[in-house]
Length: 393
Image (cartoon, rainbow, N blue to C red; front, side):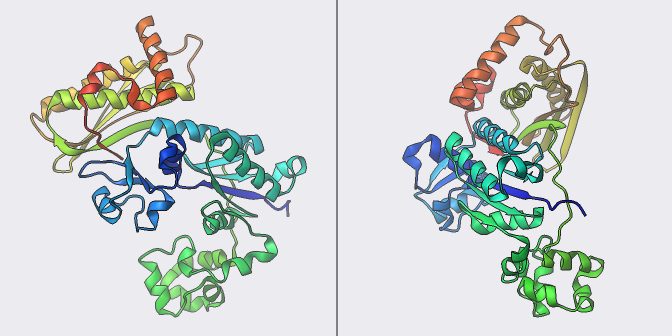
């Protein structure tokens, strides 16, 4: 048996909303919602100040505004959140190379090999949290344990600004009082069935007769009993680069005007290629996704001879794909439009595929302006036709 693992789970507190409150001090301690502002918009993030009104992420924005009319509603600034996320992940990797990212604001860190150099798991966890606050101005919740399952539960248990360590000899005292719904995999369909058996807490599940539990869990009974004991053998799998990048939006109102759709396509391509360049990759395949008013979804793609991260090159190819669909579906209202790139690789010695030097200079200039001032401060002229903010998916 090898050395016991030391796993840290870090989860940023109300990430998008917290970034907005940090960047706009006038919104600090005020209820803030981030998301789409149109009729089909949803809440992408809710500050803790607005959650007490019953607002939560993925809620329709119209309902959220009724629950808290005084809330500040802000559009999504994905490029800014990615910028902050990149800094947070740099902090993670200063503690260990074994970082498994779950999203922009959440990751597992296996610090087992770092203990001898950096100190105890609590010391490392405290330093990571303090460094995030120092370098980004944001708070994070930290959970620590000898496996991923317990570390995740620990960070959730302490939110916001949590700092919870579950030692091996404290597993039962930590898990037993929790409602059985806290166990991964026990959702809305399974929960009522298990509660009918009189099992309400994790302690009751742990002590239950496996034969009784099998009536609900079937062949997965052993799995759920292991979780009730706090057992989890999964390893932290270090994150690799994205295999693809994409962006799509659902419009507040269906669009059938081709120039409006092309303008939105330009905006999306700018976002995707900007991310490509920031991550140091080029892409070989471009894909366009269209969903019409009847919810019928179509995808069109084409591959390039030479991979690229040029906004102009990708847009030209994506435009051809979209225009071909439009010709086949004359005047069909479009509900959703998206663009993606795949076949990512590092550029060769020739660098990124550009048709002209002017394109290269323009991309570099736009990237720098957006990095400093946000997505909406610079764009190609065509994208200015889209003056309504759609709902980000």
